[in-house]
Structures are given as C-alpha cells and as structure tokens.
Length: 200
Image (cartoon, rainbow, N blue to C red; front, side):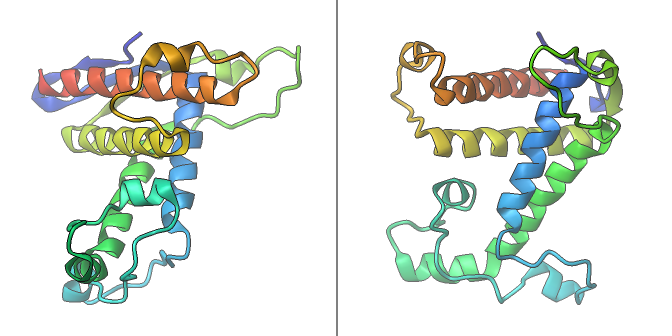
C-alpha cells in the first residue's frame, strides 16, 4: 500500500498507519545514532567557510560496514586521494544525512512509542492514521533518508545485487533476517511510490 499522493508544485500528501510511522521513526533515530557515533554534532555556530569545509574529519574509512555503505570511499583505487577527500567531506555528509533523518522525524513526532506486552491490545494512538503534507524539499529529504535506511539494512543483512529474493523470503520464521529483509523491501516500495508522487 502506498502512503504517498501527489499534490501541486511537487508537494506530497502522506497518509499512513501510525504503526508504520513508528517503525520509520525508530529506524530514523537509529540512523542518526549510527551517523553521530564518534562525531560530535553540537549546535555551535561555525564560520561559513568552516561550515562548508570542516577539516577535522577522519581520514580512514569507517570500520562498520553500514557506515562504510553510507560514507563510501570516493576513490576506492586511490587510498591517499580517498583519505584526503574524506577529510574534507565526511563530516558535512554525516550532517546532511542526519538533517534528512530529522526532517523525517518531524511529522512523526506525534507518535509516542509504547511497550506492548504479548497479547495486549495495540495502544489507540498506534491504531490511528497519520496525515500530513510534505513540501518538495521535505519530500527530497524523505527520499534521501529512506535510501539511507535501505543501505543500512542491506549492509547489516549482507544483501547483494545478485541475491535471489526468494532465498531471503524463505528463511525460517525464527530467523530475524527474514523480518529485516521484509522491512528492507517495504522501504524500497515506499521510496518508489514517494519518488513517483514527487515527480507528478
């Protein structure tokens, strides 16, 4: 089911179940935490030039496969050039990705996560429907964030371009990777429908 509908001037109307919004919000928060690891993201004001080119970024690629997928080497065959490029760009790229995730969290902040015991009814606020509208710029931020969420899940699962989807979907029910793969596919569908709505 698509949650996105085209509006005029690139705007997108969103209507989704609250539990879906809660899942996206939780994943976006985890993404922010991942991108903020070992990187102080404070609110201090920087000189405009310093804001554009922060020169204290790391030179070495991340060791976490998911972070490496999000922040790949620009020149994989030239380690020294890649390290220098990373030093000038990585912190800015992290900040841009975190900002996109925060845009996603904005309209979803009305959902409050709740601990629900097995067999207990779903809280009323999670059975409701969320409705909000995204500007063209916000829709682009959502697309960037959904892409990053898929890249992160793909890295965690080890999904490759040549993988057979049937293999993933036929994993035993007690294998957590099956559920993660379904979320990965679901995010892909939402990304495609959002892109389609934004381009109408």
